[in-house]
Length: 51
Image 1 (cartoon, one colour):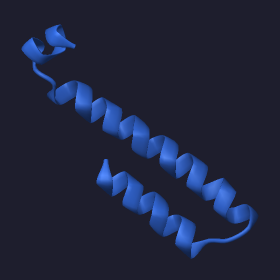
Image 2 (cartoon, one colour; image 1 turned 135 degrees about the horizontal axis):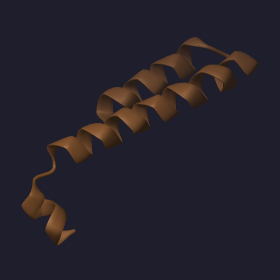
Image 3 (cartoon, helix red, strand yellow; image 1 turned 180 degrees about the vertical axis):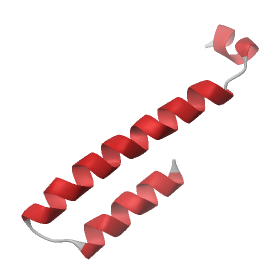
């Protein structure tokens, strides 16, 4: 999660204007998707039952 936030922040710092909007949005979306996938894959069955 921190890597995705760091990458999104880095891209935001390196770009400006309309390019920032076009790059940060998809980068943040991909980072959240990857984190969600990883979180679901590493959750144990017992933890999934408890919430």
